Length: 467
Image (cartoon, rainbow, N blue to C red; front, side, top):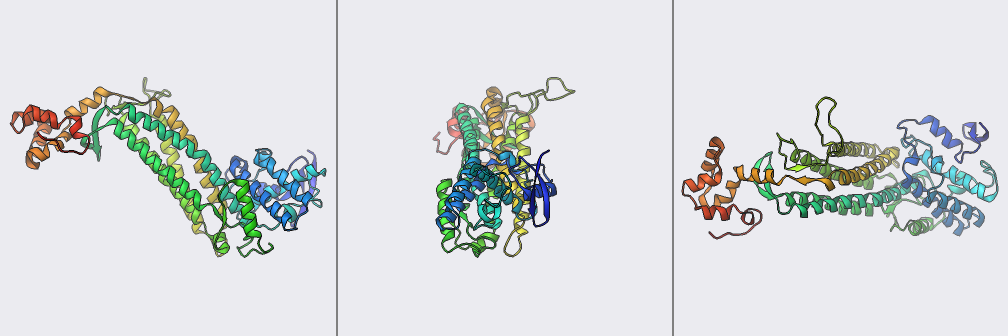
């Protein structure tokens, strides 16, 4: 293999001649092999890093800290990364020591070597354009990396929200389709009162819609960044006015409403916005998992369970039991949710582990948030296309459950009293007779009155029925 020799604080090392990364990236790749997931797994983060570097280059050019030639070369290199080129050169594991320094240097070296090539030089000829002195000018990992994370998470959220919104729409479509089907509602897995299958699916849709709004609110918190604070938020090695100008340029490049944090020292050490965002994803995961549990219960059987809905059959369910089909799609969503919930705990612990002016555990935080977004996006698309859209209802079973339920006695309580209703319910339970038949038999109400009170119009929404 052809190599080139590069030098850093620890000495010389041979780097593959055609690699756009350099010596510090190679050292990090050798040091950290934790997850097997490289930075390139998250293109939104690379895109965000490139935007940070481009904004810094233009600001340094305007403040006479970089020549126009160097600034142009850096920006051109960043544009290549923003457009998706050379992402395979980001080889460092997402979990790493050093508070993200390895990720930042991976970006600095790749950008420097792309820029050198554009200027007509060889890779590694850093005397003409240097990863630290030029690409990283007026920056520290401690402001460039978390700023890129704030931006990258927003980009990932932009990719995720349409999948969540589409799942919500699919549930709304099913709510309309099932609006006429009366079934029993249940509390604590016991018969409660009637509802429609449409109401059940509409509730699923509404609860997911709430979290679309919460994700957007969480993204707004990520628009306050510490870029320009450099090492600990004091802005060392930056000229006066740099922080405000570089964030303005980054906002323009990214089209996100970014603003400088009101206190850069606080913003450099605080992980609160990441914790909040992760908590929103956990909240959503809990909702998606609960909904998946409900789908599994409602489709249980097919002959000895609730059996009120049918999930589309996706694959044979057993290697030993012929004809068995399992609810594999909701099960996969459950497992996705459990991982997101666990990731939120990792984010919580990592945020708590910050010390003094920096949190060295930022890579763990960023990895888990981005990974949760990626998993949730794929899982929501799976749930919609391979499950929700294909659900059908067993109307006869739903109607039979209502007819045979003791729970419908609740609708008669205002008219026959709680004591009579309790006695009728107990008799129905032990004799197998229906509530309707017993009430008529005891002359508590006429058949016409019972039919009115137990009609869907009376039981499914608020309102006074005169009998």
